[in-house]
Length: 573
Image (tube, rainbow, N blue to C red; front, top):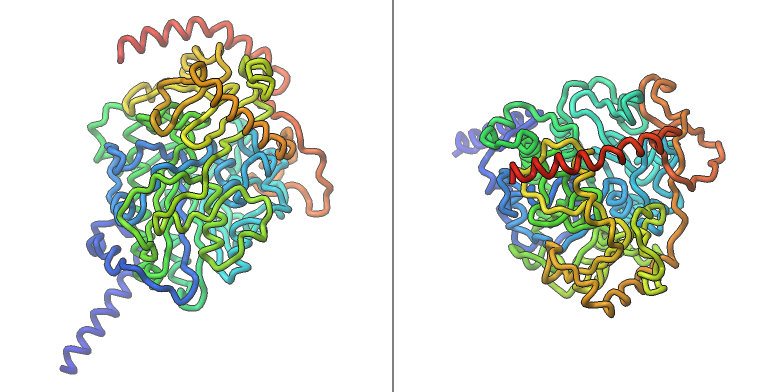
């Protein structure tokens, strides 16, 4: 008997040593994936739950296995099946807007970030006076850690993640970096290194694929923290599947049969994400977090079809207010869910995570006046009716490319302004909602972006108002604006209501002092703490004085590209 006990102790120690020595674990190197889901019955927590939020970048609606995708995501599929799939879940069409609304629980019109993204050289960031989710979780007694992409501004140190509520940070501050070199460029001439540990530069990691590197860091955080002594909030903000797509060759090989090369690489990148989530969930089990944890998986916006992503069968792409740009992939997996293994059709928005998670942590979200999100935990966990009845997708007063007017807006709203709102079953878009085609995953991904834009821009110029019954027509194929002017009027009134609460747009021009060449070749804060910030309203002009001249050249070429693309489409489709 004594020999049997000693043998078991030796085996446990041997396995523990082996697991701790692994830097990267592939699914076929560990126990069966079913190990992750044992004991998933309802668990009464003695302390607030550990919260793990995994955010992917540019992952489209069709880019996950359970949406009938050709991309293999067995871990994500299993986690979603055992949890709650969110099939009426909305994010924003771009990176910064989604992240800002997740972190603050507020619409863009209430933070001044309603136009585009924060560029690397802009003296702009998430408003410093606005409370953040990690700050509120810290107040509730949580250890807060972030790994991955920030993209919420860094022009001064007060904007950095470690000054906005995270005890630790490891990742990139800008919106797009090379997966191996961690070089980030704001236009070809301006490139710099962008990998940071806290408030210092993290040299010495070149050559390590970012998804692997970030997953290793997540596992180290989980190994070092004591789950029994303090609840943990871990925000994993992956850069995958954002360009530039450079997956290791061994991950591309399973998709060698795909004719679309861009789609092939994109699928490989998403498969690496699936593998990363496997390793993170395995670590949750191994280190004692799992039974008292809530894992949330979400994309930040829709995919770019011409770089390999797919939002099929939805209309549109990243950067647009069509469903393909804003309807997100998302699910919640947790042993704490009361009703699991189901699909939720409840209306949910990315702003809802702030009050939902603060409530789960035992905090009081009501102390933050002006929140646009709702506590959705009863809806997610128990299937109760959603408190959310509408979503303001955005109002961008700097985007006035449409041909609308106050007259077309029934003297309620200027329909030249880019805006989108969802009320009940109805969705209204005004101004220029973005290029709105329905793109199967294998079509045209190799087209240059400029050609794509010229082709897709045709057809929207004569309109400034669109109305869809999204519940009955999620693919937005039947515009009902002409048939239902009464509904149009009601939704225009809601836009006017929201607009009265908006703050001024904060979108300053570039600051030449941000140039990485002035900071040792690194992207980082360039404004001193005591320096007074100048007025930050304005419009960002990427090409300076020659912008109008360049645009005219493109205009002159538009008819040629239109005819060329039409011939290619006829040949290929």
